[in-house]
View 1 (cartoon, rainbow, N blue to C red):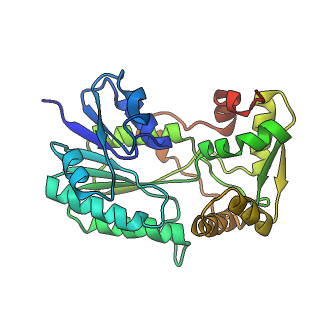
View 2: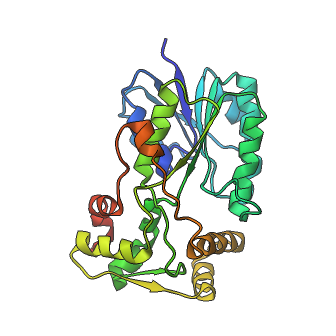
Length: 290
């Protein structure tokens, strides 16, 4: 009988890529989605089933975890993500989960760290104390987050960010998913913490150059003041708590604290991680004016 792997936040950036990579393997995949309608795209995939999952709802957690032996736990970027993570771990204990892979974040163990990192660390500690065999993945910033800047790239040929000349070891979410699949399907990764990065630390000017080459248009980086960035986010109805956490994160980037590069992706998956040029080429259509 095939083992069942539950992927939470399966409609998200890393979750969706993980589901696609696991489809057709020797495992059953249970894609946990908040919206069954949005999860319809997974139905044609072999060995994939959909389950309605709301981390706030203990009954839905119990149903989603029934018969599950392994989990990739991804929590939403929300004010209560630490509480939701701990609630899920308790439910996983009760369900007898035998391996839980947690998508955390780079810098989660920094002291005193930033709010986002401290929340991820809370969940890590809860998992480590749970007795469930675990693997913690701490990825650097996602290349796919630049898709949030696609509108200004398309309309103004510009990337607007308050990061100065800080360098970040950005990672492609597809490589995070590849690591998650390897960790979930192969033995020997239990009770390990992996720091995941791309192949090099790059600045936003490097990102702009990669988009310039991929789109055949000159894309420039505009380093905006923090207060300008905050005002723009608030005008786009980003909640104030999220604005504050993002500005903290940008401050870490600007100060050069996100430059560390590791070889974990290649060691675990057997191939080097994608670079920013690969990302820009593969997603070029998102950055082209309609």
